[in-house]
Length: 299
Ligand code: G4P
View 1 (spheres, helix red, strand yellow):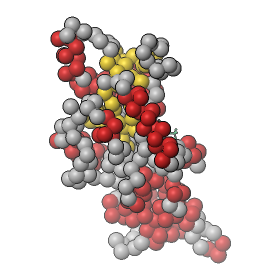
View 2: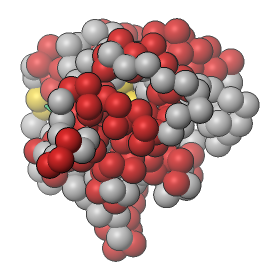
View 3: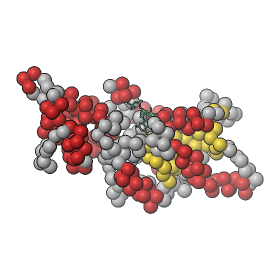
């Protein structure tokens, strides 16, 4: 449960106002923003207000947790973003895979600004970027990866919020050391479920057995072989999520008294095993027209 408690941010209106204000204050200091998404659920893990928040700042999208996502689906998402003129990179911040693409992508993103500065005789002027994302999407892990590699943390500077630290990336490119925490979508039951399945929001918002049963249904449709192989059960496309959960529990020998399946234990097992990647690399959203309709070319 530790991982669930860690991201226990309740988004009451007061907290959202505070988060928004913090982001707005920090945005004044940066030239570009990078939103981290969970590659398994790029729509559900994106912030609904990012376009409004980022304004005219160039935006880079980082598809993180690619180690847990279906590579074929991630490819589709990359194409989806690229076709819409958005810049996107794929990362696994945990192992560091793909993180090297970040600096070149930011440089590319800020090319026009670099050229404008050079034309004004201000070549080498510092350019700053900020990482944004919903809780638990990997912001700190990503920043630590970059900081670990690039080590130097620039000290306070005049005109910069007191205590704000900048990580020097290369040649005048700096990354804000604290990420902006964005609120998740409160859009629908569907999105809420996807966020809970991937641990972005507390799973007991919905009860975990129902969540796990609904997750089983998704898997039955999207990746039936993953359940067959992992839990050694067979099923038809007509069976309910609870049926599958029960079968898996019985197979694993998870029982409560009188030989009844322990659904609660199986629900937690299923969700934890997905989290650990033990079911394989499974994506839960595929791009559809309009799925990220608010995303326009950022520059
Ligand atoms: P945040 O700042 O956005 O809130 O997220 P944070 O970096 O704290 O990451 C949340 C969890 O996600 C961490 O796990 C981290 O290791 C994991 N994580 C981040 N990026 C990736 C990735 O690309 N792939 C995978 N597989 N995991 C990633 P944790 O707190 O150690 O717990 P656990 O989730 O490993 O159990």
